[in-house]
Image (cartoon, rainbow, N blue to C red; front, side):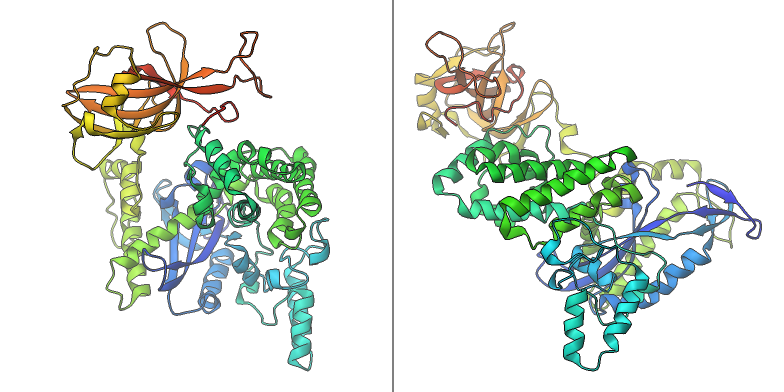
Amino acid sequence: MKAKSIGCGGLPVIMAPISIFYDDINGNKSKVWNKFNSWNFLLAGLSRKDNAKLHNIHFICASNKAPVMEMAVPLVQEFNALEREGIVVFNAFLQCKVIVVAPILSFLCDNPRGAEICSQLGATAVMYCRICTVDVSSGLQGIGHLRTKTDTVAQIHRIQSLPTKREQKQMQTQLGTSCKLNPMLELAVDGHIMEALHTLVLGPYKYMLRSRMARFLPQQCKEVLARIASFLFAGVALRLSRDISKYYKSFVGRDFKTLAQLALFVFPPLVSPGETEVWLALSKVFKLAYCEQFTPDKVESMKSVCLGFAQAVDKHCPELRSKLKIHLLLHLPDHMLQFGPPSGFNSERCESYNDVIRSHNIYANKHAPSKDIANSFAIQESIRFFCSGGHLDLSEMQCGDGVIKLYQSSEVEDFLTGTPSTCDKAIYCHGALRKISVRRPTQLGSVLLQIQELGEMSIATLIDEHVDYRLLLPPTINLQTLVTWGKATVTAECDTVDVGDFVLYVDRVGSPMEVGILLSCFESDSTRYRMVQHMDPHMVASGQPCLNQFDCPLLTLTKVIRVLSPAAIVRAISVDGTTESV
């Protein structure tokens, strides 16, 4: 954001467009009662890196009593004054007073609230789109005439002029417009943006997953679990539950985003070619919705991607034809052309900020929660103001350079907002155990392991009958020694590998890497052990490895168990579609 020196009392003017986010949250951690309506804003001109930080989201107000539109009346007055007149503030970097003008660039919220802002009825109407006038019967064929604020106000007056309530209701359903004038219509911003979380992740992906999992047979569910277990999650932010058949109805946004990255490796062998086409088209839309950059000359190809998905749904999934969220994806390329990459206007970070607001309410006395939350944020913002170099008109004193430098560190900023500052992986070195079991140390010989192809057996039996000692380990293990067990380890390439994951390992120095399943991680007498079940490539009669459609060798589990040092575990590996028995 650059300052412009214009005729405004001799003060420079800074344009700082903002995005408004409002949502309903629960005032307690169980998320079952005490509903709050909250309003926040963030600076729309920040870089994508800074835009994703929670301390760059700012609290406006919250209430568990007032409805959203009742709260909007005074807020609209403030927003209009901020856009038309601006406010005078002291700029710590320019060391002078400036005028900040902050027009509203967009609203970030879920689809029902988006319709409420635009005075539309949403999915319950015949013309169900809040952005255009397309009706539900042709929603997947393209985009209709774009709605404007002027048209919406004219339609509201037209509905109010009808003599009976019945006629008004019929007209509302037909036009998709509410019968009440919305205070948000007084703002200069026109229309509403489509964002990826509520429209794509919690839309088609949720519809497709629930529809498919409900029709899977028990044997097919087992195959889905096996395919998820064989998927490498090293490049994915979150692991997906291996028992997806039980918990898929409880998935939230982060689970569906993980599913989007592995759906093409899990479902296509188990569904029809037509449904595979839908999954493939949906993955292309997902890639588009979370892209970091694009060029304007690609807009037509982006429109063809979104239209191709809508047509695939229309052809192969007729039960989803009337879904509003699938039609809204057709507006994604136009919004990208207007507002830039979708990562700049998604609402995931704002949804995460709800937890910060909730924490301010939990530690209040509950007598006046709205006031307590606002006071708590006011103190936090005051600390931020002074520690950033600001000062009041009554005093020219400012914080020293040392305090300002300290406050600019991400650890201090995250501490003040109550968010974790660093990833837990950063404090673990190569070979270290992670997620140590809370149970007390046990004798090695008394522990039971469930091993594929071998069933359940004790460590003592396993060592006597199947273990092959290899790299950098003593020839024997004392079974009477107390050991500490871990659920995961860090590989030689500093990746985290959980017990049960597929790994690449070396059994001797200088030998080629092999594939296996990590069975256990434990420490005994200051010695670290990693137990791996070996996998061999499946050979054909000619002695060559059998290859699948991706030219990858098919793998078969063996009864060979190898005890290795942590240095022998190289990295995790994805063997999806390459195993005969998993």
